[in-house]
Image (cartoon, helix red, strand yellow):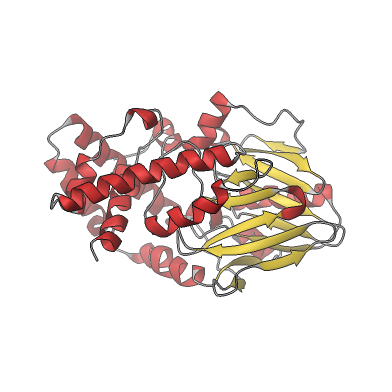
Length: 349
């Protein structure tokens, strides 16, 4: 199975960005820097947010940004390709002549970290959780030499066994997801973080001069989540801990831990703005909507466990409720299937 342009755009973990352009649109402010694949706007003194536009190319498949203080600059996200990270470097040099303190990866997934080689080439420290290097090695480096036929076999078998139109479509999408990831791994110079944060330390404060970045380690969407809080501007970069009106990718998630992280976010003051990994800048109402979605998945898992169903049966039996009918949910196994496996691994013990 090969992936055409339409399938690629629908399978890059960033459908919220496309949805955002159709519904809420870009920031009304003139961009500080713009490329076909991303646009950066000033959202506060010394605070710049990069919104990815996957329709313009795969270079920058996640949102990011630049924090520019009197003394130093901090970059956020490594993006999908080095050109995406280079976009942040160009933005930093455009708005400040101060030294770059580092670049934060909100987690280790390809669309947030595969462009890190551009930072390494510029000798910019790459900041991430201390569990990220081992996961990059085991989940990505190891796959460079793995037997691709064996990796795709379970998905091919599911496709062959499909008896409904929905099952066949989902199996094809899941094969496309794996092929996309394997292709990305093959063409990426994997780069490892150089400055590691520990979840045992509640927060790391980086004073940039007039603006502060508070880095908070979490484990929810992945074991490597890093939240970047900017208290002076009431802005929080949350990476993929928040999906904007979309079913989340859960392949490395702890669903119960993820839910606990979100509750305090939903209780933040109404003035606080959240920059999700993909899609428009949000408020706490979006966080509450996402919590409702996770609760629906949780409730379904509990019902299936009580009925004696397996996690794969729970995956097959999940029906998207009317409240979330317009939420993208392609890559079913990485979203619904992975969520069920996470719930089953914790709820059944």
